[in-house]
Image (tube, rainbow, N blue to C red):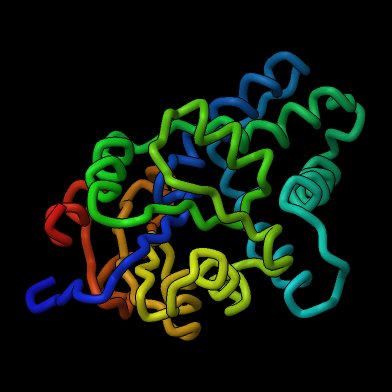
Length: 241
């Protein structure tokens, strides 16, 4: 964005699901395969989208105190049970199949620009994954895709999910920086809004296919951020990396 001044930024915090990795392709492919093995004609894309639609409401119930803290795998499993039940597939999917579906979120393909862009950013900044995913999930995902993060900051640390301010401020506290010294990178307007409210600087990274080919993703024209880019490599160039 013309006129953006990166002075003072010390840390780049990166959202994972959708921003760094392609959850739609990963989950739709894996769940469709599990469905075939179970003899269920499952539209992987529609199933992944419906599952993702339950993501924010599940975390909101935790953040509002409606339910006790639970890490993301537990919330994903509860949402999965709801999806399977409403579709009448309770008998078709056994326990192992359901566990595999939940673990599908642990193995998601990275966007092609992610590894190179992150590596370039690391030459100048501390680059951390800041995600609502649990530690086990994030460790497996980042390791499988060889993503060059300096560290992982899971919502488990704050026991609060983004977009709650506590999730962002726990990250800045642990990295010993002021909120204004951290740049949050995300492809979701709600994540950008949450970070901005917490006092962080923000970079919206547009991912047109984040929700698949049939569902519109958040667009830069609809999001208020300090900076808008279309890839991690563009972000690195903009920040002088």
